Each structure stands twice: as structure tokens, then as C-alpha cells.
Length: 137
Image (tube, rainbow, N blue to C red; front, top):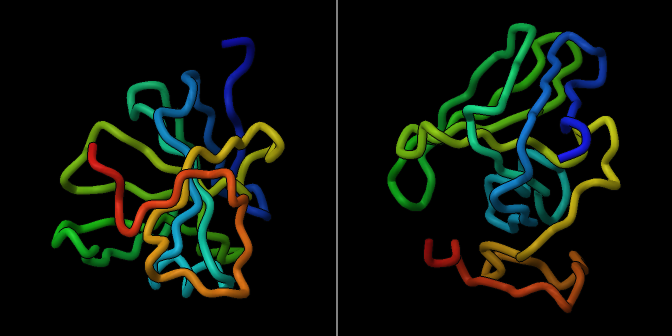
């Protein structure tokens, strides 16, 4: 990898640097992601936690996903921007919001998840594999 993935919130209070390539990148159309993004989906890149450096203090919001597992959303208490997610059942991964990247063009979605909850007005790349829920892992 030539350079780390860097990013953070809008005001700069939370910053991250990630020294590995994404494990998985997706658009998620679950209702939780729709509500958080204010649109029809959220866009995410997931990395190995070992390569992540995080600075600043995020506020956290825990919620239970369809799997029954807790997912924690990290957001900035100053500007309100959602920046990352962690998952209690998968402590070795770290997921960032694609829009929080300093260079969002580096984001390359691989799939659409929770497509069963998508809306007709939320047009995503029809060439991406679309899963009704999460793909088998």
C-alpha cells in the first residue's frame, strides 16, 4: 500500500489513519443506515483494526443489529458527523463512513447489503452484487 487511508469528522476533532487496504466496502440499505445518513443508504469501508490509529474523542451510540449483536457508532460531539462503527461480535474490525475519507474517491464499493430494505428512489450501481441482508461471511 502506497499511503494510508486518512479522514475524520468535518471539524477535525476526530481523525484516523489506516495502514491497510479495506477488507470489504459496501453500500448498506438497512433502516439504521438510512436514518443515520438521512438518505437511502450508508457507504462504508471496513478494515482490520490492527492498522488503525484514531485520535480525538468520539461520542458513542450503541444499537442492536438484525443479528442481535451490538454495533457502536462513533460520531463527533462538536460537528455531529458520524465517522466510524465498531462491532462487539467482531472486535478486530473497524468500519469508516466513506464520506469521512480525506480522499473519498479511494472508496470502491464491492456490494450492496440489506438490499431488501432499499427504496426505488435510491439508485445504486446496478453492476454491484446485491444481498438481501449481509452476505455469507
